[in-house]
Image (cartoon, rainbow, N blue to C red):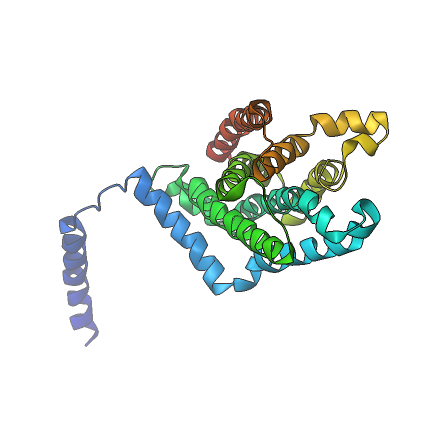
Length: 279
């Protein structure tokens, strides 16, 4: 019996080697196909863990209701008048804070070893990052849509009309896409998601709260007003507020494009360098 089994082993090995030799190597996927595959992977993760969408569904509603009714009467005398000022700013703040999750997802992939498997695949290397960033753009759009619809229900009336609101959301997406490259860089450097979260908060909290999101900077002390004027979040809020209320200038939009380009030029190549040389 054992002799028969021993005689069959070489035959099986030969059959397996022949089957492998005859199989054709699958073609290398195009950059677009690889990017869409990773975007689908990110969407499937959202499907299986829907709780992670709280940051773009529940939190924007809580932020808008809380800040409108908490500060509206004290700052502007009425919640309705304060809402006209607040909504563009808090929209920027909410979406900007969501951008950190791009780096957190990347950091988790590195710690679990999935990152190393991706680098061995014959694919366009940036597709894993670009696919995740594309899905994040969908998340930003969802958060913006929810906040604008809620604002309209509460009494927000954009004087810039529908086109002004769409242009404002497009400007936010552009800026937040560039901002995401900062967190992908940190996601490759930091050794844990907790440390990345801590650093992200240390950067985002001063940028979003020491800005013109909640109050007019003219009411602030001079040293604080100087910081608010050059704060990138304040520049974006100025442009978004102007687009929504029909008072935007070319300079407001130009500053947002300039800052977004600077961030992308610095951090996108840095992210790809770290991505290729990560050990």
